[in-house]
Amino acid sequence: MKKIILMSLLLILLGGCSKPEFKGADITNGPIGGDFKLTDHHGKPRSLQDFKGKVVVLFFGFTQCPEVCPTTLSELKSAMQQLGEKANRVQVLFVTVDPERDSQTILAAYVPAFDQRFIGLRGNDSQLADIAQIYKIIYQKQPQGDSYTMDHTAGSYLIDAEGKTRVMINYGAGAAVFAHDLDLLLTE
Image 1 (cartoon, rainbow, N blue to C red):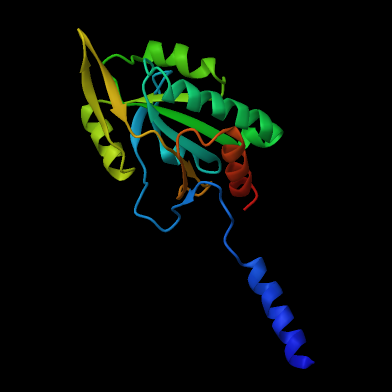
Image 2: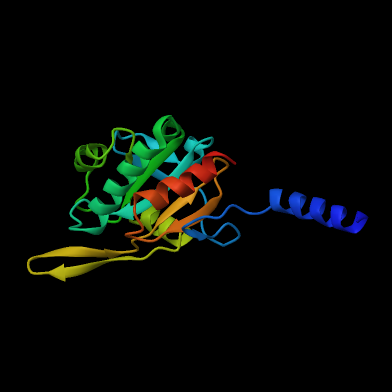
């Protein structure tokens, strides 16, 4: 009987120490993430450290993106609504992979149109290459008639309040997946 009680207590204790069950890919122990230096859509220099204490959603895209970017930003807007007051402890960061066309003015009009709390970030070619390397994303121009479009990684990263990259959510996962995983990070 003593063994059964001890085993039950051990299972209860171990259950309390279990990892959260994210709906996105748990990349907590992966080699992805780190600090960066970019400029926000107000012209203010920013780094990941500026958002310490908040859970960050980091998404790479461009304003002329026909589907992936507006869909993801719309899902994030809906997730923020689902989180209610907790959403004030989340910061969505949209990093443009097309700084040639996505000026500060364009980002300032585009990104907050989804949610006033969202911030657009841009950098020069070197800064963009640096953040792409530490977050293991790809981006490249694809000629399209007289212009071009951008191929880019479509997933979003969730970064905990201490600045550690924890989750990658694939494109099209939906607002409920974002809300679920953000809520888990907010309650840690």
